[in-house]
View 1 (spheres, rainbow, N blue to C red):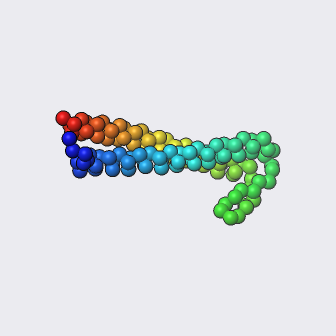
View 2 (spheres, one colour):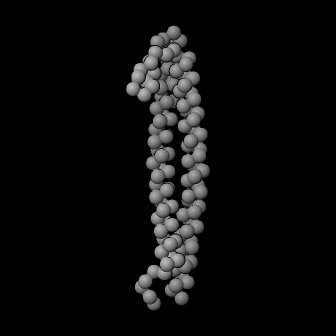
View 3 (cartoon, rainbow, N blue to C red):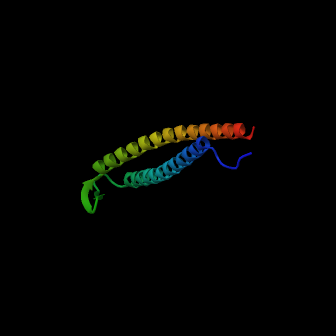
Length: 117
């Protein structure tokens, strides 16, 4: 039995490693987006406790801009919706990556099994 790994299996292992890195990247993105969504939802909860005529300052980049409650609630609701859509997209990507990972594992195991014979 040869101890050298055939090029086909090396290629499959490289693909597997790449898929694993993509999965890790997606997990980090998902975590960040979930955090941003939770923060926006908490801000909405706090705004809900305030009277309608309250003066609010929103951050826009480096600036603090005077706003009203209605506008702030609207912007936060848009943000939560956008983040929710991004999370759905990432979840679909994670499913595809997971299937590809499993597929590659099976191919590698099959190739290794053929090499052992």
